[in-house]
Amino acid sequence: MTDRSIGHRDKRKQILDAAIRVFADHGYHRARVGDIAEDAGVAHGLLYHYFASKDDVLRTIFVENWGELIARFRAVEAADEPAQEKLVGIAKILLRTWRNNPALVTVMVREVARSQELQAQVDDVGEAFAIIQRVIEEGQATGMFRRDVDARLASWLVYGGLEEVLTGWVLGQLPDGEEDVARAESTAIEVALRGLAV
Image (cartoon, rainbow, N blue to C red; front, side, top):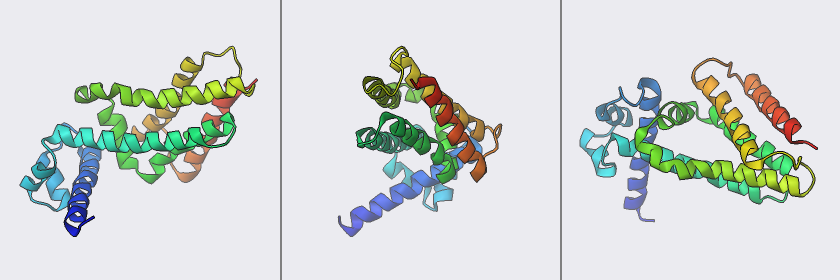
């Protein structure tokens, strides 16, 4: 890559990181493009060089970060491990995202999930459920998980439970210290695996 393309990529990331902070602090609807530019330390007009609108910034945050999460889920799915360990891995990835980047999780839970503009991305969201469903079906095929459980519904219950824990942290309804996150992780895994276990 040339110095110019690296500079372009870094400036774009700087703007996206600032947008995540601003959206998390003020909420998407109250945030202004000028707030994002100020937080990023760039001229107001430069933001429009990279993004068409505030909506475009939010869509980009979702697409790029969700894509990264799905790539990590797929890596777990492809690993040479039992289905039980794969479910554990997926739960850890999702819940530890809060510790690594609470502002991003706040934006994804509070803003992206409720955005009318991003309803077109529903197929992208469905991929997370599909991966979990395939892992559950793999466990059923190997005799590790109960075959009388509907794998598709179970995937929604597993993912939905994990997302509700994240929502509890975002809304300040659940404690989110290091030990609390570890406890949430072990509890979610225990509940999911006990329900699926033969």
